[in-house]
Length: 104
Image (tube, rainbow, N blue to C red; front, side, top):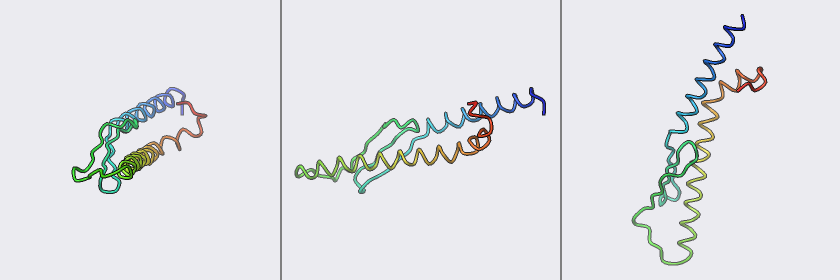
């Protein structure tokens, strides 16, 4: 295969990778914890929304701590979902580019 053809294929693959990453970045991931907290996070791991069930009542400091823990748990679940999705969608590019010494 000549170098020009190879370069065009690599540039096309680079564009596909960038498009895939942009798609992931713009995707909203939602996760819940305890049936009380639901968070929405962009693929960039930017937290954009926190919803707390309106029936949740704070009666003491323990409830505040529990709410805090549920927010953290929901965010961590969303972040893991982002990582998993990114790994799945980018896997084909990693395998293909493995032999090119990290050109991209």
